[in-house]
Image 1 (tube, protein in one colour):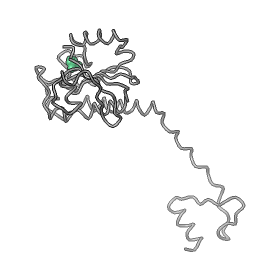
Image 2 (tube, rainbow, N blue to C red):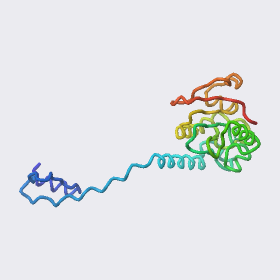
Image 3 (spheres, rainbow, N blue to C red):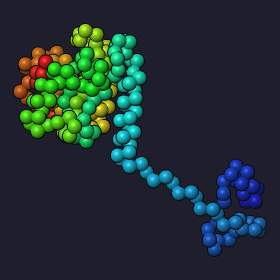
Image 4 (cartoon, protein in one colour):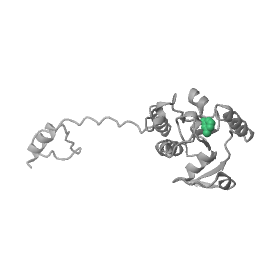
Length: 211
Ligand code: URA
């Protein structure tokens, strides 16, 4: 294409023609005005800011989740509690009545025992352990979660694990242990050894539920 015509086309679609300093202009036409420097690209988001946005997105999805019928009976979704940078992740079954009311996992009687057990090994939900459940919504009457409820909800926990990247996970109770390990082996036989979870092969230990 004739270079003058080409320049006109480019100009018409808003593309600025750059000419190397000192180089011959492509045509006899006057050299284009000095190019305006391109606006500086926004600096890449800080990893912390990206993680914070991902957590916020996850929280909002859980709070508005309608993936299973439990959203019809719950008071609110219960995401999790604890620092977002921590080595330890404790995973329970599902919110009970008190957790459903307060929006935080393990705040009822079982939670008080769990806190005491964690405290005994130097862990505290305000400082160095994150606590979540397999289900984010309370099953009515505290019945066991149904497989389809677990299937709908587990992706949230998997996202939490990907964001936290804990160094160790502790599943408390049969429901959490069996669903994380994809087995129906009795809890008693899953205890006492280290399993591994997910793509990162995170060490996973299981124990009885504090309830
Ligand atoms: N039991 C659980 O498994 N999770 C809670 O959050 C509370 C009780």
